[in-house]
Length: 126
Image 1 (spheres, one colour):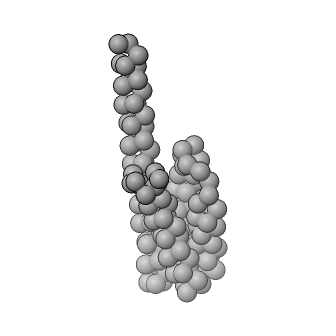
Image 2 (cartoon, rainbow, N blue to C red; image 1 turned 90 degrees about the vertical axis):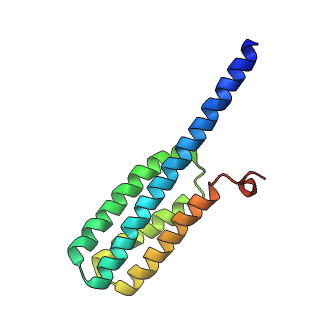
């Protein structure tokens, strides 16, 4: 009987950790996507101060998220996201609006793909 309680406790603990991890992943991705959208809007409106501040904030958000993501996920998606975020920072400094818009769209796509690839679904299990 004790083994059954231990097994049930471990199952509940595992499920709780999965839900917490996925919730944190979604929250982090959503925050970064919102920052990227702000960067894109700031570039279109010519607001260089907000653009630079948001680009720095995005790098900080990614650095913080990467520490957490590295502990719970495989690293296959990280290179694309990291490159996109670094490119956004470079383009923001160069004031290249067209390239910045494309890089923002690319980063949003990669973050959305990360959320979808880690979602709870039968497709991701089998």
